Each structure stands twice: as C-alpha cells, then as structure tokens.
Image (tube, rainbow, N blue to C red):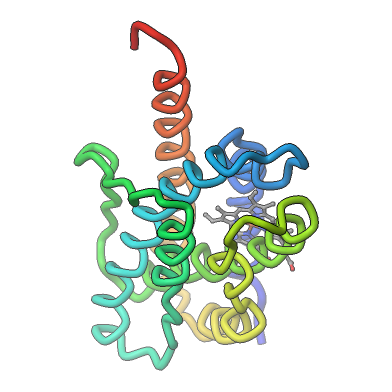
Amino acid sequence: MSHELLTALRESTHALHQELDHHPMMALLLQAELTAAAYANTLAWLHPLQSTLEQQLTHLLPTFATNIDLGPRLSALETDLQQLQVTPLQLPLELELKLAPSEGTLAGMLYVLNGARLGSAHIARRLQHTSPHLPCRYFTEANGAAHWPPTLKLLENLAISEYSDCKVAAETVFRWYIKVMNNAQRETVCQTASGC
Ligand code: HEM
C-alpha cells in the first residue's frame, strides 16, 4: 500500500497545523489557567466549523459511495456548550467554506476532520488534568481510534487523479480554520476593549 498521498498531505499541512495549534484561540485549551469563559468562547467558534464540515460531508459521502461512517461530533459539542450556557456562533457569509465536490475533496476534508480527533485526545487529557470541572465531551468522545484507520484506508485507495483535489481540500480547510480563528480572536479582543 502506498503512503505517498498521506506523506504529501502531512508535508503540505504541517506548517498550517502548527499555526493552528499555536493560535491563541486554540493554544489556550492547553493552558493551566484556562477560564470557563475563554474555553466556552473557543468552543462556540469551533461549533460552526464542525457543523459546516459535517453538513458538507453528509452530502458528499452518499454521492461518492464511500462506506465511511461520519461519526458526527456536533451533539457532543452542543452538550458542552449547553452546560457552559453559551450559544453556538454563526459564521458570516464571507467566512463560508467553498470547495468543488469530488472524491478527492471528500478525502481531503475527512483527513482534516478525522485527524483533528487525534489532537482532541491530547486536548482531552490536558483538560481533564488542568480543568476537570469543565465539560469536555467534544474532546473526550472524539474516538480517533475508530475513525482514523478508515480515513487512512480511504487515502490509500484514492485514485491518483484525485490527489490534487484532496491536497487542495485539506489545505483549504486548514486555512479556513485559521481564518475563522483569526476572526474569533479579533472579535474577542473587541469585546473586552472599547471602540471596536
Ligand atoms: C490546540 C489544538 C490542537 C492540538 C494541540 C493538536 C495536536 C495534535 C496532535 C498531538 C496530533 C498527533 C496525534 C497522534 O498522532 O496521535 C495531531 C494530529 C492531527 N491534527 Fe491536530 N491538534 C490541534 C488542533 C487541530 C485542529 C483544529 C485540526 C483541524 C482543523 C487538526 C488536525 C490534525 C490532523 C489532520 C492531524 C493528523 C496528522 C497526520 O497524522 O497526518 N488539529 N494534532
């Protein structure tokens, strides 16, 4: 089995992942002095990202006849938000995710969505250590062990003609996360400062 595509995806998204996990909105999840308000704010911004990806994949999966189980995480995220008494956010039109539908696009989106489950396990362990009082079903129930192997298999079996769409989709989704988190950061600073 060839890991050529996986290697290419890792190379092309490594720096983007680093930018994202160092982003103030995400990095705070790993900090010892995490407040409930800051945690809830990040979760409220993760909601439209998770929701958009799950919605778009729900349409793409039957079209490309893959037997992948989406394993939605949105209800776990909503349960956490309800406990934190925070309403999920809506993305403005200019922050919508637009990708051409294809099997490669589907594979690239799943690489990011299911790869994030692996990072979630890491975040969950940290949260349980630093902030055991905070609800964290979204991270603890990510279940990467079940969803990562079928994602790797999908990538291994993807036709070479779809590789380009797959890489474009993975990079686009990472860039979209960063753009939304930059917007979130600006709005968060504005809420605490006057004159914005
Ligand atoms: C604070 C935030 C984050 C941290 C600390 C983090 C951490 C990690 C860690 C430790 C891994 C490797 C896990 C393993 O191999 O068992 C990983 C993998 C991955 N993460 Fe993240 N992550 C974060 C956010 C995200 C987000 C928001 C996304 C998606 C938009 C993402 C996408 C991925 C992907 C695609 C992989 C798999 C890479 C591969 O093996 O090819 N991560 N992350």
